[in-house]
Structures are given as structure tokens and as C-alpha cells.
Amino acid sequence: MKGMKKMGSINKKPILLVLMSLLLMLALVGCASSQAKEKEPMNTGLDPKEWNSYAFKDKFPLHWESFMKNMVDEKEVKPKNDPSIEPYLPILWNGFGFAVEYNLTRGHTYAFEDQMEVRRITMNPNAISACMSCKTTLFPQMIEEFGYDNAFKLNYHEEAMPWIDKMTEADKGGELGNYGHASVGCSTCHDPVTMDLRISMPQLTLSLENMDPEVMKKQLGFTLDTITQHDMRSLVCAQCHVEYYFDPANDRHTTFPWTQGVRMDNMWDHYEEIWEVEGQFQGEYVSRLTNQPILKAQHPEYELWSYGPHQTVSCSDCHMPYQRVDGKKKISSHRWGSPLKTVEESCRTCHADKSQAYLKDRVKDIQTTHKSALLEAQEISVQATYYVNRMMTRELDPAKIKEAQYLLREGQWFWDIIAAENSKGFHNPQGAMDSFRRSITASSRAIELATIELMKAGENIEELKQQIEITKQNVINETVNHEKHKQAINEWFPNHRGD
Ligand code: HEC
Ligand code: HEC
Ligand code: HEC
Ligand code: HEC
Image 1 (cartoon, rainbow, N blue to C red):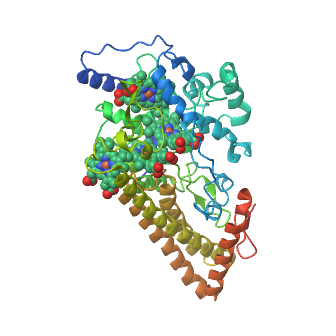
Image 2: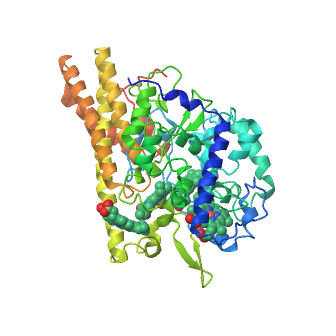
Image 3: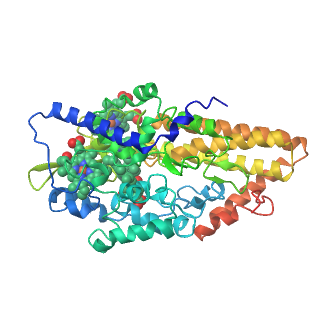
């Protein structure tokens, strides 16, 4: 266990936050003015606290038209534990809401509504408002209304939703649906008056502030007072497309595990540091199969991208390319989706020597290799889970069980953090492979340790392997998606969580 010296700084209060936003703004303005000296600062005449995206419609009709495309071409909402995607999630996430339902992403304008409809919110009476901290432009107002200490820990259904409904009521049912005007929107990324890029979500500001400045410089290429416009073109996305947890030691604030850096092993080190410290975050859930607190990762697009081959290319360069609209004018696309639909504008600006087809094929190749490595890492993690389950059933040496459980946790983290990343490896093929390798090493060590102990106790390992195979098939064969997790537990592999 490493020293705890850095953890104290996590308790910073919002006064610093205001300061930081100012710093970021200054850095930004400073840079913008040196780039385009002649430009008049914009003044939209809107309220500086404007949160409603409809307010921007008439002022920016071309951007509005682009933005509205997030509402069309709806992707089918497909569960991620579909046998064709990641079949063993109901085993690996057993005991967590995600094992019940976890859907693929849809457009930004649906973000808020999609969240309200998933079973892990609807079926969970204890869901909290922190879940809204990366879904709605109303979150900063929520902090004002309820106070910084309370805003993240309100009851989702009883306290937060009635207020959200009151605020959104007037514009419900318009072209953005019921909540699209309060979902990810203009004020998330823009100052409503100047339209400068800004960070509106406190969690990013605080997490950067809590980071070691040396590491920030080395890994992200900036310090808090040297952030450029180019950096902002990715930082606006880093408000949400990052790994986070709701810190139980700090009013459930949304927190990024970045104190030691943003790489996958740095984030693991952060979690390892608070592991076993009373009252600190230990995991998102306790596995029913192994009674081990497990870290459930979320979408670290920003982190993985930051050390990949395109780290000098901003998120917006690929995902919001300049597009000619209205015959002549060029604007940044405000339809967020796959750059493979805009290869000409997103990629060929740099890779002019490569054809569209070649570039698409390269992405697919990377993603195919990536997927097979992911499935391999998950497969080994499943084995490790059931081996440890058997050690527990046989009541073997508690010290050995503890050691194996911890390796299991490590193995799970290093595939999970990459599985949660939405580019399927493209943002950083090598970084993803490094993480899978570490996952496989840790899970294999858990299996090895368990095998030795089980054999000492006379366990028939061949039989155990067969039981695992049958159980895996039962999970795959269960056709009712939210029942799959029940197949992961049976007479061979009991629930060890005691519920
Ligand atoms: C306030 C939070 C937030 C910010 C800021 C944000 N996103 Fe998102 N983004 C989301 C959420 C939430 C989803 C998933 C929506 C859903 O599934 O309903 C998403 C989905 C996406 C998708 C997938 C869309 C689809 O159709 O599947 C892309 C691509 C994306 N975001 C890119 C970006 C980029 C690039 C930026 C920065 C310019 C950015 N996002 C900023 C929250 C955010
Ligand atoms: C997820 C973040 C995000 C959201 C949400 C967003 N924008 Fe933008 N917007 C950007 C980025 C990034 C740029 C490029 C800024 C730059 O580097 O100059 C941009 C640029 C602009 C520009 C400058 C001209 C241009 O096309 O580059 C305008 C105007 C604009 N956005 C309007 C809007 C409006 C109106 C909305 C809501 C309907 C909106 N934006 C929502 C991120 C966002
Ligand atoms: C060099 C171009 C490039 C850069 C830079 C880039 N991306 Fe991507 N991104 C892609 C490609 C290509 C995909 C895969 C699209 C596909 O599979 O159809 C992707 C996928 C995604 C997805 C999943 C989209 C979906 O349809 O579900 C999200 C979300 C995303 N990127 C966010 C980001 C964020 C946030 C950043 C910055 C931290 C970023 N990207 C930087 C090219 C890029
Ligand atoms: C702003 C310039 C820029 C844009 C835009 C850009 N790239 Fe790249 N790309 C680069 C550079 C620079 C490298 C080389 C990085 C290196 O050598 O490490 C690279 C490398 C690559 C590689 C090889 C990296 C690897 O993983 O082996 C692929 C494939 C690629 N780009 C595809 C794309 C695709 C697809 C898009 C659009 C979605 C895109 N690029 C957009 C600059 C760009």
C-alpha cells in the first residue's frame, strides 16, 4: 500500500472550482485572441446561465440543423451482452446493475432520456443524481439549487426528477423530444454569451486540479495555465468521455481517478491506493460469485486517446470535422457519431495519400484484432471467477482466497476499462493491447494459484472445467436478456455474497 498523501486534496471545495474555470477561460481567451486578433468577441445576448438548447436555435440555424441530425438515423438500441457482442458479461458483472441491462450508445440528444429508461435506473430506487452529472445541461443549475454538497447525492426518482421535470416542462415534446433540450447541449461546451468553448461540468475541473501537475504536463502536454484552444477541442469531450466514480468519502461527487495520471495503470494505482481504506471507494459492486468488490469501468475515450497514435489530433478534428453547409459556409459538424461516415472530412485532411476504402479497412482491421483480444481476456476472467468461487465453496486457506480474489479484481479492471472504451481499440491500439496483456496475466495468476490450492484439497479440475463450460453455455442460451445473470449461478457455483 502506497502513502496516502495525495488523497487529502480530493476534498477541495467549489471556491477553487470557480477560480479554475476562470483560469481556463483566461487561458482560452488569451490563446484565441493571439490566433485571430481582429475577431470581435461574440455576444449572443443570451443569459450567461442559459441551459436550454432551444434558446440557441434562431441564433445559429446552421449549427442547429447539424445538431438536429443527432435525432435522426437512430441506431437500434442493442444490449451489449448479446451473444454476438460480449456474451459473458452476465457472469463477469454478476451482482451489478449492468449485468441486468447495458445498451450501446445513441446520439447526444438522447443521452438524458436513454439514461432514464434503462432498467438499472428504473429498477433501482436508490439511484442518485450523480448519474445525471454527465447527461444534462441542467447540472450546473442543480448545484446552485441544491448546493454543491447535496447536488450529487439526491435521490434520482424522488428528489432530482421532480425538479428536472419542472424545469423542462415548458418545452417538452418539441423537435428534441421530452428531454433533448436539457441533454448534452450547447451550454455543455459553449459559454452561452461568447460561445467560447468552456468546461461546464465541475468534475473535470476538479479532477484536473487534483492531478499531479508534472504528470499532467508529461501525459497531456499542458498545465492548467497553458491550455490552448486545441486542447479545449478535446477537453470539452473529457467532461464526460472518461472513467469516473461517485466518491463515497466526498458526498458522492463524480470524480475521475486521475491523481497519478490518466493511463490505465495510473487509474488502477489510484484505486489501489484507496483500496481497504475505510470509507473510501472500493468498487461499484460486490460480485455474487466471489464476494469481491469489483471496479466497473466507464468509457475512458479521453484517457486512451491521450497516449495513442492520434494524441495530437483532437476529438473534434475527427468527430466534428468542418463541413460545407448551405452551399458555401463551413461549420464544425455538430452531429457526433462515427467518423467513418465522414472519412473525407475527418481523415483525408491528413491522410490524403490513402483512399477512403483503405482507411476504413485499417479501422476495421484494428477493431477485429481488438475484439478477439477482448474476448480472450474476458474468457480467462470467467475461468478465474469460477476457480475462485470453487476455492470459496471448499473453504480453502482464507489468505490464499484473498490473494486470488485480488488478482481477479485486477484482471477484471484491465479488460473492463478497455471494453468500456467505445472506439473498439482505434483510439489507441497498442494501449488497449497492453491493458489486455496485464488483464490476462493477472487472471492467469489467479487461476494458477487456485489450481494449486484446489488440487491440494483433492478437487477434480477436469470436472470443474466441464462445469464452467456448461454454465457458460447456459448463459449464452438464455434468451431473455435480463434473466441471463441468473444462469451464471447454479448448484455448482453458488452465490457467495450472502444475499
Ligand atoms: C455532457 C456529457 C458529454 C459531453 C460533453 C460529450 N459527450 Fe459524447 N456522449 C455522451 C453520452 C452520455 C453519450 C451516449 C448517449 C446515449 O447512448 O444515449 C455520448 C455519445 C457519443 C458518441 C456516440 C454517438 C452515437 O450515435 O452512438 C460520440 C461519437 C460522442 N459522444 C462523441 C463526443 C465528442 C467528440 C465530444 C466532444 C466534442 C463529446 N462526445 C462530448 C456524453 C457527452
Ligand atoms: C460536445 C460539445 C459541443 C456541443 C454540445 C456544442 N458544440 Fe458548438 N462547437 C464545439 C466545438 C469543439 C467547436 C469548434 C470550436 C473551435 O475549435 O473553434 C464548436 C463550434 C461552434 C461554433 C463556431 C463555428 C464553428 O462551426 O466552428 C458555433 C457557432 C457553435 N459551435 C454553436 C453551437 C450550438 C448552437 C450548439 C447547440 C445546438 C452547440 N454548438 C453545441 C463543441 C460543441
Ligand atoms: C483520428 C480520429 C479520431 C480521434 C482523434 C478521436 N476519435 Fe473517436 N473514433 C474514431 C473512430 C474511427 C471511431 C470508430 C468508429 C466506428 O467504429 O464506426 C471512433 C469512435 C468513438 C466513439 C464511439 C462512437 C460510436 O458510434 O459508438 C466515441 C464515443 C468517440 N470515438 C469519442 C472520442 C473522443 C471523446 C475523442 C477524444 C478524446 C476521440 N473520439 C478522438 C476516430 C477518432
Ligand atoms: C490531423 C491529422 C490526422 C487526422 C485528421 C487523422 N489522422 Fe490518422 N494519423 C495521423 C498521424 C500523424 C499518424 C501517425 C502517428 C504515428 O506514426 O504514430 C496517423 C496514423 C494513423 C494510422 C496508423 C496508426 C496505427 O494505429 O498504426 C491509421 C490507421 C490512421 N491514422 C487512420 C486515421 C483515420 C481512420 C482517421 C479519421 C477517422 C484519421 N487517421 C485522421 C494524423 C491524422
